Image 1 (cartoon, rainbow, N blue to C red):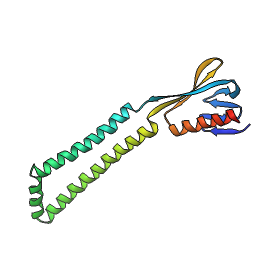
Image 2: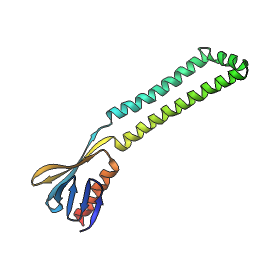
Image 3: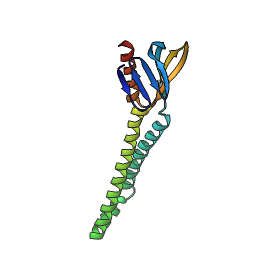
Length: 155
């Protein structure tokens, strides 16, 4: 008996499929098929919301800087001496750090959408009835299991 895939929930061998303490002999499994359902609705909204917030902050900062007179206030603070320079530097660094963190969160949300944005299901015909064998939102693991099943059934 050859093992094609094994993790904490799934074990695919040349003769059997074990998923979460359920046993399916491969020769009794009929047609296999996959379904994909979108899970990313909330994550997409969060990612887009963060990106829109970053754009809004950028536009507001430009407006305040050029039209709101912050430009003249910074010049005045810089003319006040070392204390003013330190104040402007600290405020500028704080804004830059917050901006980088917001962009990092937005990019992480978008990356999660790509990797975990769908509910993937593996179905089979077993004893004449459709049975959902496995479901996950991890596209990498799902692909590995499907390829292992194809190899096990053809080998």
